Amino acid sequence: MLLRTDPFRELDRLTQQFLNTTGTWSRPTPMPLDAYRAGDEYVICFDLPGVDPEAIDIDVERNMVTVKAERRPRQDGEGIKWELSERPLGVFSRQVMLSDTLDPAGITADYDAGVLTLKIPVAEKAKPRKIEISHSGSRKQIQA
Image (cartoon, rainbow, N blue to C red):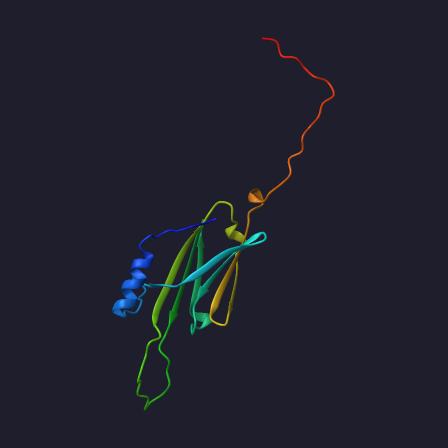
């Protein structure tokens, strides 16, 4: 029920990882996600470890969900000499296009332990339903 929007996103991610570049607002780094259906809702989990919840922005326009976040460098004070810094910093973004079978108006978000979880309800029109069969006692004949 989710549609991929950018087939080159993985190539960009690998290139940025190889070149060790940080994301900017004009060219953000993609964030990994998992998506699955649980009953009558879709769940999308974005990995955002070390990101302040205040630095996460979620926008919905029609069927497009955009998640942006920024991981800023830690301010540990003076006299700090970094020996190793491998955790990526900068801006992260991901867009997910929802199919018409999901209801973007009902999206809820939760952030816990570095994982942003979006829950998107399945639209009523897409839920399975029974169709009643009418039965009439009389048969009509059609003449040609």
